[in-house]
Image (cartoon, rainbow over all chains, first blue to last red; front, side, top):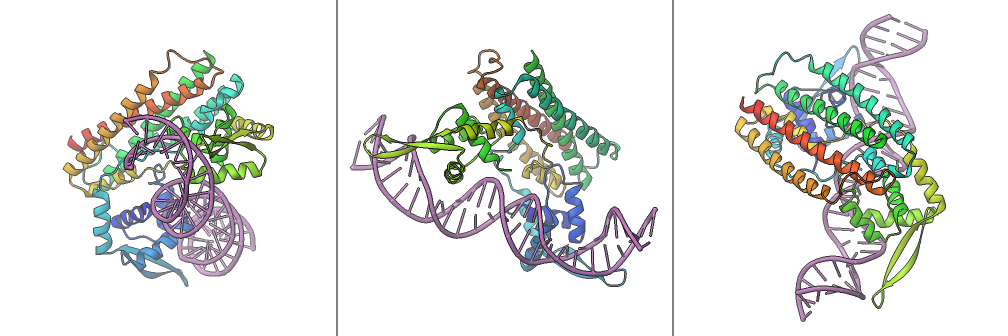
Length: 178
Length: 178
DNA sequence: ATTTGCATGTAATCTGTTACATGATTCA
DNA sequence: TGAATCATGTAACAGATTACATGCAAAT
């Protein structure tokens, strides 16, 4: 499906970046729905360059350190636009180890189950606090055709997801304790 | 992390099964949070047998068709119990191509965005109807120490997740249309 | 008889993570 | 001057999907 390809093209469609900067984007902006390590990004960038979807210029940082500033090409832009316009069937399985554990948890003592759920709840609560803090940077709803708008929608989605997950965890705790 | 290993051990801890039956379980009961194709299950079963965590007897279906009925061993049971009792850090990234598309969707016409969101909403609504139908098989809340209890909790979680996802999609549609 | 489902496997490929490897720049 | 960060790459491995491959059993 080459999703990483389109994630990179989408980011380079916003502005030219180095591989390192792309990595930082995956760690921040896209973190809630996609990720990639530098060991995956650099080879993919090379491949995209071979395919003519991106190109780069070498810049010098300081005295000698070379960095490659990548830009999307017209072909790349066309390819990306085609992808983003596509409709898709929702993927069947968002794999989730914790839910798997809950599924099997009847073999455990109730105390331990509740402890695990509480632990999970704590972690997701702090995650939610972090997301809500990120939301502060928007004042009001961004303009519909700005990149900030997409940013806003997915952040809202992430917050709603965390909220809902916490709600589920609380219900599980309740049902385990009666 | 060997999650498939523990998913299989957990299922075999409930009852002895063939690889084919395990495959069916992954397609039904576990479908909301884990999946595996037969091409992954059969080699894993072989490996688990080599590791002494499961064993099997060959049964004959009809005249000649051999099937392997797998059972969990004591070692396997101990290993599984240790795993299910473990606490874990929530995984950072539940990758989601649709959210990635939404993130970049500002490059599209508003009409197309709304169309995509509506399409997604339709699919998730029917998915939710399907899940709610599954829930009917429970009358009331299952006993806390039965496998049905875990089953019930994750099904509830799946329904809540779908409900929440639909809510998010509706908000996205609203914000795109003003 | 033919189709659908039961039943088991391997091979090739793709995607992603961890570990290995190196070196420059900036800030305290 | 030492630590954190910038910057780029490769190699080995793990996990998972698609395709290849075969054959029996049951139901229509």
